[in-house]
Length: 117
Image 1 (cartoon, rainbow, N blue to C red):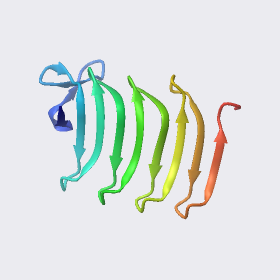
Image 2 (image 1 turned 135 degrees about the horizontal axis):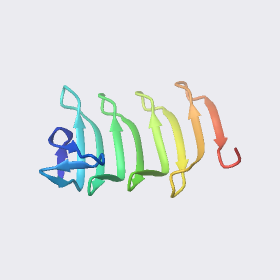
Image 3 (image 1 turned 45 degrees about the vertical axis):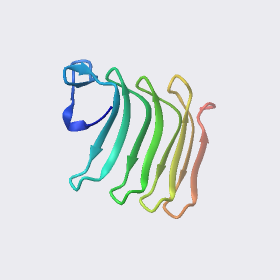
Image 4 (image 1 turned 180 degrees about the horizontal axis):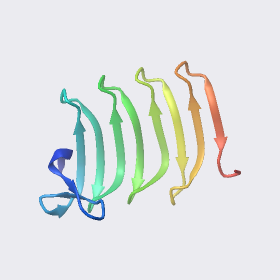
């Protein structure tokens, strides 16, 4: 099931609720012009699965995977023109392992292993 974010609310535990039930499915967010700018997967009210964001121009802004509310694996961000901006890698517990960042011109500005810090 895919629904609009405006059809939900958060309960006292900050879980997403739709029609009185903890929401399982895809939750979309649109901007004022009706462009899809975010799509997240939920299981029983908690972010779980692929999470995506887009710029209003339709290009991908960010994507990553959440495992029951915890960022895991690779998370990527882009600039509005499609140039890579950042890649962050997380372990299964959500600890950040590595970060790579580029400036808007595509020049590498950071490539850091966070497991040795």
